[in-house]
Length: 227
Image (cartoon, rainbow, N blue to C red; front, side, top):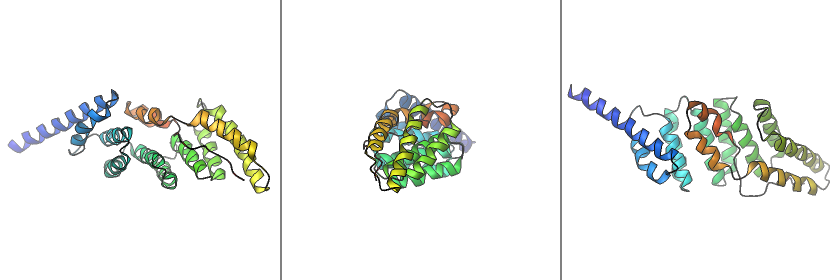
């Protein structure tokens, strides 16, 4: 009887910790959210989103290594949101400048859910940073197939035109200066400075968790198409 009561009390404490941490995260108070979420993830049966919220709180504070460690620890518990775990982990790798790791991890998100369009979009941009233009173009096209009504479609289509031109010119050993300039402009306009907005969408309900975190990852470096 005592053991059963203790178990009920522990479960209630875990729920309270999760709810408190979630509310603070939604209120854009990552520093205050962290202690509650750190407590929540120690409890058995906690909502798997607690790991995501904790990692995003660390990320907002620039504590990237802790964000990576949290997502990796949470992955064995992930079921419904496993693609998002990988997606957010890849986003942190981008912020750390680890674009090769990011490409691989976006691929794991895609393996977990082949229809998860945001992973194709962000993998394309990571590949741009690695100057893997041909595969980046393929990912952009796959994203547009999965999300044909995305508001960023015109910018991505323009970027694809310049990418295709740039790759063709590179293969022909011709100059690609104009393609570089236009690719930079399109990429900056459509793809930069959206990390926070993308990841904050993960704090919404189940539907938003699957679809709302799909804004493209932003990058601090210029994206160029080289010869």
